[in-house]
Image 1 (cartoon, rainbow, N blue to C red):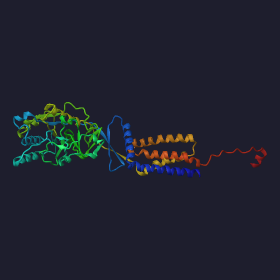
Image 2 (image 1 turned 180 degrees about the horizontal axis):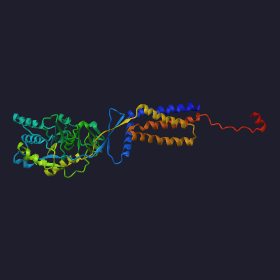
Image 3 (image 1 turned 30 degrees about the horizontal axis):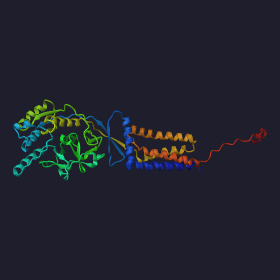
Image 4 (image 1 turned 60 degrees about the horizontal axis):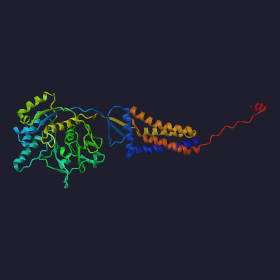
Length: 448
């Protein structure tokens, strides 16, 4: 077999191996995960000190979307304290007509989001009770988003997840990690009296007595129920439950909102900020329309803008006072606001198929040309090639925001290396130039 034919066969086989792996790198999940890890490592090394996240580019597998992280900003809250002092002019615990006045007041002040930590649940019958609830629903419909809570528990006799809770739940498919470590629930202690509506979201109320006071999520079958602070963050970021992705042991990504660190059990791993920014009003001070002017005056003393969210504190307490519980809830929400979040978008496009084939062809040509060198020099050349290929791809990515998988180039180089060792025997042997016999000067002159 001639030398050029041997090199041609080596070139074709090495190129075919690289092209096959190029398709596998896009469609085979295990290999794609390795490529993603290398991509993230290279990006981190090129942006030392910067934080970023890499989005899943589905359905396009030829793109990598990188979002730089920026610090969160503190938000101002209108906080209405609901405790025993409300009994001076209102009922205690509050009745639907009391909440009706509070909601109307907050809406007239200018708040767009209402977050109520206490479950709104009452027992009653008759037309009068239904009328009270209808008025309450009308007051809630004025807000863009309303966050309500329910108390969840796990009983021996489970119930199907209610429709209103399922509509606000995060799909289990959005969770990465061992979901069996999450606390399971299967029962709503007191169903809400409020009629579910498109602007109403439900969450569970963290409680110290049940060990859920620091949990961000609970599991109900194939659904993940967010906690009250997480649901408020989702509402303020205008993120639906389907846009929330959970990586157990790492973080909860609230769409374009904050990245919330959690452990494998779904507990928050944050350091509370102190003090949170809030305009505090008592329930008796934020009930009637005549008090709207005084509430606005209290707001103007601290900020130039009306707080987008009004937070109604839970009056109940188990192991702590109402004031401490109220502050803990607000601190948790304020801490989530200040966590880093992705902002902006960088699109890193994979090289076109022709460019990738050209790159692999270059590697295959080098492999073919190296065939026939002495063994020591040939192995040294292949070692240099294995180092040069990753360096070339890294430089290609860093300078042009384009990328190509590492596996095809390495497969081409390795295939060429292995085949070269086996096919070197088919090269024509090197022939030493035989020296001509000595000629006498007369013969040489005759030849000349």
